[in-house]
Image 1 (cartoon, helix red, strand yellow):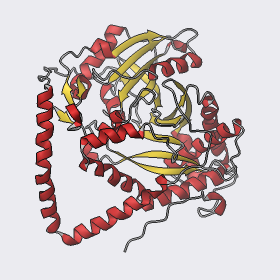
Image 2 (cartoon, rainbow, N blue to C red; image 1 turned 90 degrees about the horizontal axis):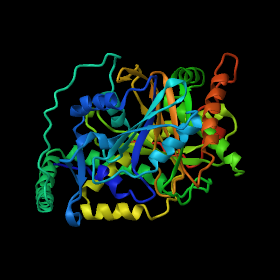
Image 3 (cartoon, rainbow, N blue to C red; image 1 turned 135 degrees about the horizontal axis):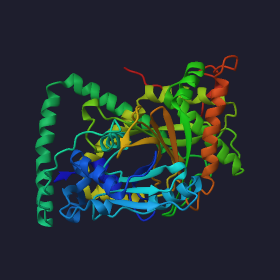
Image 4 (cartoon, rainbow, N blue to C red; image 1 turned 180 degrees about the vertical axis):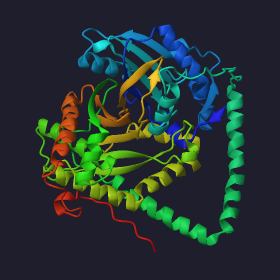
Amino acid sequence: MHRMSPLDASFLHIENDVSHMHIGSAAIFEGPPPSYEEFLAAIRAKLPLVPRYRQKVRFVPLSLGRPVWVDDPHFVLDYHVRHTAMPQPGGDDQLRNLVGRVMSQQLDRAKPLWEIWVAEGLQDGRWVMISKTHHSMVDGVSSSDLLSVLMDASREGGPAHADPWQPDREPNEAELVTGALAERMASPYEGVRTMLSALRGPRRLSRNLWQGAHDVAQTRSMLMPVRDAALNGPIGPHRRWDWARGRLADVKTIREALGGTVNDVVLAVITAGFRDLLLGRGQSIEDLTVRTLVPVSVRRESERGSYNNKVSAMFAELPVGIADPVERLAAVRTQMEDLKASRQAVGAEVLTSMTGFAPAMLLALGGRVATRVPQRNLNTVTTNVPGPQHPLYLAGRRLLEVFPFVPLGSNLRVGIAIYSYDGGLGFGVTGDYDGAPDIDVLAKGIERGMAELVELAQPGAPKAAPARSRAATPKRRPARATRP
């Protein structure tokens, strides 16, 4: 039995009938597709490496403690691995529709919170693996590690892993309550021990308290309401899904000529996509920014291999009102430099970690309230996950491309996830089925924005605007951090 962290538990508590908190991807493989039995055998061989895949969630009665992971004594691999085929001709439209339908269905909380769908019939003899994993199990970076675990680094694969797994006895409700109360009783001791340790280093304590308060203050921008960007509103349970492609080589060309980081370039081309989307809807975008939550991994290198959530966030303003692509990139670059200097992501992590001191009952209640209160401080979410830059294989078939899926919450009607793999960039665009029927405009705008910057990065093309250009600086830029 393993107790969830407050952050992991929050993804369960904020889930409701219309906001399904699973992340996922559509991974496209070369053909021919494996048989269902062959695919099952490939997944079964890797299960010993990911114990969480055979565990389910148990909630503590009366919310006296956070939920726990326990072994599922009735685990059946066939339930979680599904086999289907796309309608012919198996083109882009059929793939978009299939992924949208699969992702619209909530995972069954009575079983381990994941599914994998093998879909045959993609054009050119290819096939697709559609994966769904609840966000309470993994964040974006750890799910990238998990993808690497499930696959092989060579076509021949590796040796089979011994699987001595026998499920532990499932605790009854009385044991769940007893365990939660025991942990609660242990908390005062841990608090006293932490305080005694802090008293042995008062100068360090003072410095840490000041920095922590300053970091939390940097999160104030998330409390400010956003301008109406036609991206918010009630959502339903059904999803649309689309994708865009890019190449890391193109990003390198842009960086070398125009400056910025990989993340800066990615945010700039996404800004171009949102600009096209809003213009296509007839909205005025003069001086408009689109506020996006940008998850940031705070996982230490020593923590790679664990599959719980280690994530914080920054809040960026995408300058859709800037028409010039070079100025737009400069604006994004300047803003991200300020956000990093302000330690906003660290401040958000401090706020997240503080929930560990809240009683589980209040955490559950807060999650339920959050899903019913309209979001007025965000327009969208953008998550960028670096994946392996070498070929991967499953059942001897090479993985060609990966396009991720990000869930929607509250009244956010559009979200974007980016995944890099083997030199490619896959942009996955999620939209509410009724509230965002035009996400194809956003996806095409992302590809257009990338091509536009690549062209401008060629020799003889205009170079980047000054980093502090007024035209390149979005409004509400967070203040730069200072030290006493």
